[in-house]
Image 1 (cartoon, rainbow, N blue to C red):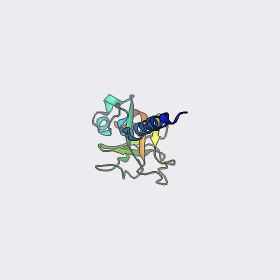
Image 2 (image 1 turned 90 degrees about the horizontal axis):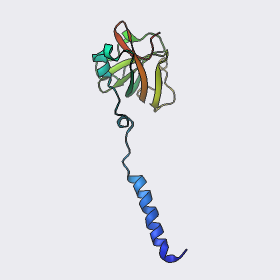
Image 3 (image 1 turned 90 degrees about the vertical axis):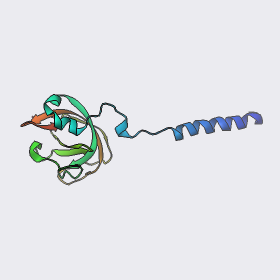
Image 4 (image 1 turned 135 degrees about the vertical axis):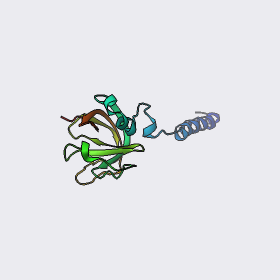
Length: 141
């Protein structure tokens, strides 16, 4: 290779690296326009019953510490393995019986009984069910 091409090769490589380094990085909550807020489900649970939704929030375990308002209502928790998820608009229970697919989670271990993973960013795809009129993510049977 001739020396006169080396500066152009260097500039080309530098431009390619700069493009990948400075491209805007989207946060996970911005990558899916179909994300449903928890408030939308809570305000009209019958409209969401049986439908699959995508929720982005923080894992709350049993504590409801990630809930922005009044904490997590235990009325829709059905088993001791159920846990909560909270976003900026509210909190909702997640069933341990199925019907939930984890799309993203920051922590490896989520355990409601031991409080592991509380506060972890979580993105899930789940079916909405009702227990005595209260919404829960996942299946209730």
